[in-house]
Length: 410
Ligand code: DI6
Ligand code: FE
Image 1 (tube, helix red, strand yellow):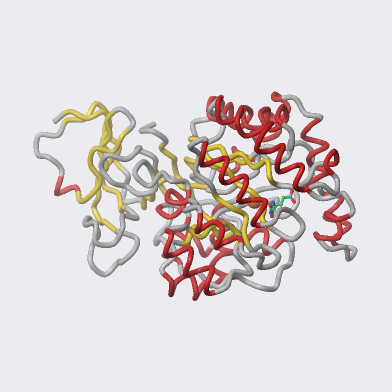
Image 2 (cartoon, protein in one colour):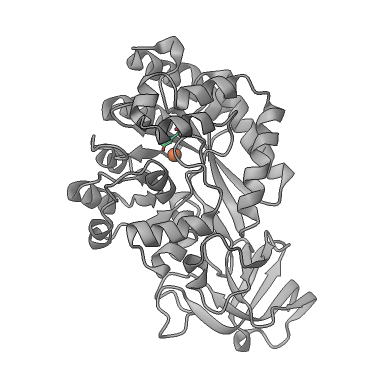
């Protein structure tokens, strides 16, 4: 058997679903394989497991000795807004002086100030300003990133954001998944007319964005300061008519029933969820909606109500974790730091954090058959770490133990 590359002598966290086989007993969840090997051909994993299980006639064009290092699937940041113009450091200072996120938003700052900066940016500007943020994530082993629009709020600027996001995948060895977030905020032209703006999202923005294949999914901000479940339902109806899966920013600052709406539309994920209740968690579990927890926004906005992790566990909702990297509520470009926050602030276990940035992050993107675990048939994306045990990836703060990153076999 001939393969392109063979990595030997690694300690694998396959992150394969428990019961899927491959993992040693005594290490539930992480799917640990000591003395592991990974074989790759044409960017795909053809084998990941104990070296003893390799075909005896295996021949590789190139063989790499991992020297006993730990290997995880490539990390996946499944919720970001890394493409945008400007920054909001001044607003941060206002918040330090006592203003709340909601007060700033209601006064026309917040998301809208980033909208003005984004509208004034060319596609090149957007690509160039996002690259350092993307590079910071890549440097920590990220191999797939989701990027949302939502700071253009009209067709041309939303389209520009999405093409900038797609272009980032040409600029760097990383997979980019794009999400149309036209229903993020009410733009100044529609002041006081949320219904009118939703109508324009459905009529003027979504159809052309879908026709040009610019977005892989459709998202919205369902919140008192943004759009109601009824308004979001109109966007979701249109998205589904155009064949696009949906997801939702839900119950971040209050409970307006966003999680139930997401469940009704079999959304890929409902994200934030600080104010989720048990009914909402049950509805998500029933509909197979992944919970994406975003501790960076919770931390940065100094929220005090943490998401109901026990209710999510009890209901059996898969939990993912992401940076929510955005200029207003989570200027965070470290997925390792995000895992530490999820553990410290939300009390996720190490296993939940690691699953949250691999297997369940893949699930939140609808790409579990493609990425998220080290299993034959999937894309050959992985991270090699200089650590003694997996918990170190969650435990350390501001320390990057990445040894090397492999994307599509390279
Ligand atoms: N919720 C958030 O935390 C971000 N968007 C959203 O819907 C905030 C975006 C921003 O403040 O720019
Ligand atoms: Fe967000």
